[in-house]
Amino acid sequence: MTHIWRMAAVAAALTLGTLGAEGALAETPAERAWRNYELLRSGAKAFHDLSDAERRELAALEQLMRDGNSVDRRTPRQRCIDEEVAREGKKPSELAMRVIDLKCSQR
Image 1: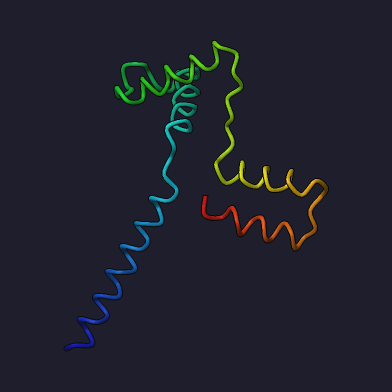
Image 2: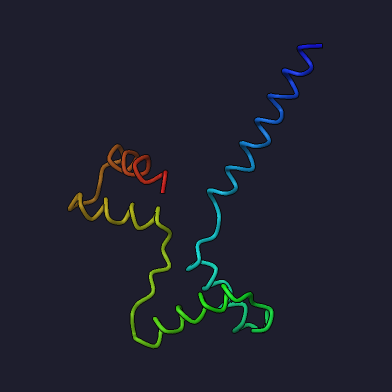
C-alpha cells in the first residue's frame, strides 16, 4: 500500500513540475502588447475584447512607437545572447557559444 502512495506522490510532483515549467514560458507584458497589436491590426480581435491591463500595455506600446523609440521585440534570453556575443568582440567559437547559451538559458 505504501508503494501506491509513493507512486501517487511522484506523479503529483511531476505534474506540478510540468505546470511550473509552463510558468517559465509565460508571455511578458511587452510580448502580449505586440500580440494584441497584431491581432487588432488584422481584425482578429476587437478593442473591446481587451482587458484593462492589456489596454494599458497597448497604450504604452503605441506611445513608444509614436515617440520614435525603437521597440525591442527580442526575448530577454536573446538580448543576453546578443550582449554576450558582442562582448566577445569577434565571432565566438562553438565552445564559447555553448557557454553563452548556458549562461543565458535561465533568462
